[in-house]
Image 1: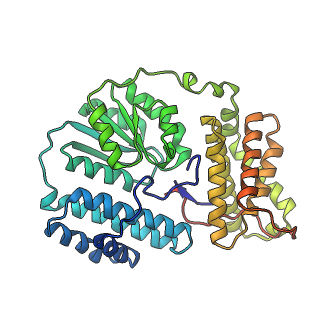
Image 2 (image 1 turned 135 degrees about the horizontal axis):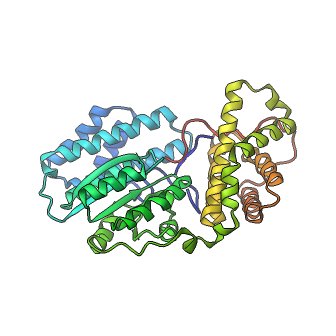
Length: 387
């Protein structure tokens, strides 16, 4: 199940989570047509022509580029855009952002301080962070944009080297939240406030607060306001993870994470015993199904880390919607959940989370009349929740 990012207590949002819906302006429409056709030259020409005509660079980024990227995510989720088309569209939008950044209308003098913008290690969705970095530059900040997948030790070394006023930490994939927590703590220990953003931190920033970030905002506009208020302030006192997450004392997260390979292996074996058609899978199909199960286990573990079952139920119901759009019954997820529950009988929080997810699936996708099982849990290939 390579699904995206994008999610939390609600269905994972599109790649540009928190960004406004397309306003329907002429530049956004021209950009959408070019991006959906895979035409990089038409896409950059549309925004450059607007800049030449006097358009505000920040408005172009936030009211044209970002909403178009959000639409790309929705089109993929609805099965109206292939994975290859989505990747191409995202790459084109990244080039468009660069074109806006290099236009003479975007040049200014950084006079408001310095900010580092980086993605959590393991987070490859860099476009939301890139949009933020360019908006901050337009607002007069000196920005160090470090891109996707920045390991915490390298980020901390950069902070010591450059001494920024704040770190803007971005993540779209909820399963990176434990890593984000460690990174937030390390940055604060280095004396740098952390401003969190992205779909991984929840639709209302609940996980940013839970993990101790100094501020959170859903999008570049609101994050800009956060920075006005917070930059230059001292980081919050560093607290031990157990202080914020006392439920981790039961070690369920630790055990599920440690045993993840076995859980995936035994779940796959149980599904093959229960669903005869799976015994005829090719090696590639079997490998892909194991990867899908691994994503389910990863999201379960993350829900145990945060203590919030909604993170897992949101992922499952979102995945059910993705499957349904592709003609695969959401009920194909149920056997994997049943098998996991059978193996996690000694973990009450994990069992309660699995039960809640099954109820949520049944509510969102009422079970059809009983029919012979013929398929395993095969969510679509090509991307992960949150991208």
